[in-house]
Image 1: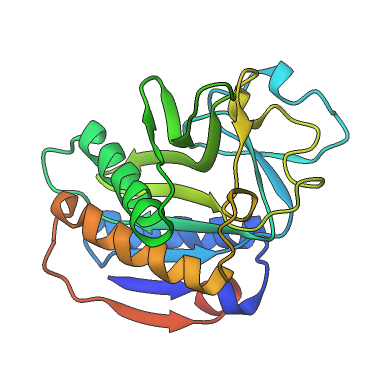
Image 2: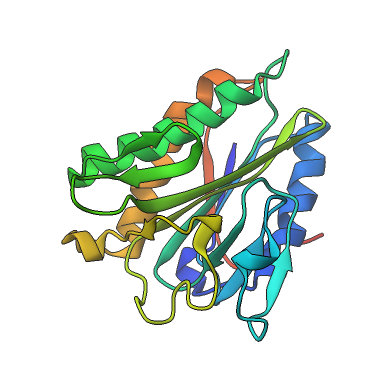
Amino acid sequence: MHVIDLIDAGTSDYMEVDRLQRQLHDQAAAGDGDSIIVTQFAPTWTAGRHTKPEDIPDSTVRVIHVDRAGSATWHGPGQVVVYPIVRLKEPVDLYAWIRSVEAGVIETVREEWGLPVHRIDGRAGVWLTEEGRRDRKICAIGLKVARGATLHGVALNVDIDPIEAFAGIIPCGLFDADVACLSWEGVNVPLRTAADALVSHLISSIRPQLADPSQEITYSKGNACEYLA
């Protein structure tokens, strides 16, 4: 499994990373190796398959329509995005794949930073809940499986701008919930540190779902263009 780490290159262009993701997906689906992309994006809004027109009330915001599950969400500085692009074991169990990704995020946030995050039945992502407050999503999860290999992944809010992030849309189509962020919860951690922790926990959590769970991990750094064929 090749971890392609783009964090140190700064913010990445969403469409460049998406082209890289599609290229790596073709390889994974053909059995030519698994990959994980780690990045943070320049400010971008994406709309998944379940996005409704009312989820994007501000028509001046540029939205990229994507083929993942879920509704509209924001990507930008201070958010770690991880795309595991891997070939799954047969028969493919989509539910088990989703749960393994969720578990990796939950383990990261609980074990590394002590926040009591969990999943909520009927709602994608990883959440913080407490009596007297609206539910708060700290990590968005949008996944797809095609030809036995995975696309898209998770977006963990580490230290995002509360004014710029998620402005003009209804995050994930949820009118009755809010967005959370590690820094807003009193956890101040460098993006680099958060990315390393998240990737480590995710790899451990998803291994049982892989067609080749024994594969070794290699790492490289750069920008998306360096890896595009």
